[in-house]
Length: 381
Image (cartoon, rainbow, N blue to C red; front, side, top):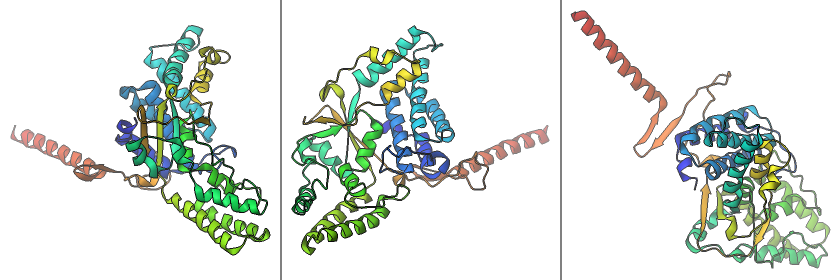
């Protein structure tokens, strides 16, 4: 779905800026917002979410270049992620108005036309998203999605059973007997669910009421692991968990934590009508506020946990997305930044790598040849 965008040089360039320049990703975060994610994580999610919204609502390659230019301005200008997401939705609204050749966004007729267009594209004919561990991507592409296959964490359930012997109940807050999975209508949330899949695992360990994990958001989850594991050991000693059971618990958690090495994102997108019909009325989005507020309410997403036990064997698509470190592009310097540094970008294609400076050099050589020809001709006259 997004492949044609992700292969573009301007998309890769902007994504590389976001991952390597603090101006783009160092923003304030509401503590309740995607609690496990780092600044870079959320910046990446917002970027992918913006591309997805453009694809679903606009789907006009002729307008993508202008969208990316304005999107970059938002990343540089806005200093918190909530307002950045709102800015993306406002940008989508403006482009819809341009696409529909609407000059004024102030009158009710124009508002209804724009909101109806976005509502039909994003909700009526829109998607639900299931974010899952990237390791399962090829399996789902080949064999489909069977929800109960993604709830069978037998060893984690065994840990719960061990703790229950010591009157510690629901250490991992998860019903391991349910046969459904959770969709969301937010691409951004879907990215989060994929990167931290299964989210209950990290939430239970890092926000557990039974012990102090000393979780720090400004550190990676790997760095937080050492603090968490020490707290967990102290807790198990305090309730007299025997050595054999402690080893099983720590080994199991350590094995799952190693999966953090896989930072790629995988999402299953499926038409909403194929999963669950949730009543949505256009009038719910038409009342109160201006056109920007109405479009923001549509695009912002309303459902983070849409439970479904529906198995899928067709009519869905799997989207694999790279994390920043997967980009085959060197770290760049913002040419508009006043601080010292070199602006350097390497383009990759089937014929190898060519530095932008080589391209510039070639143009200068060509220009020099032209000047020389003029001088020769002028001298012969």
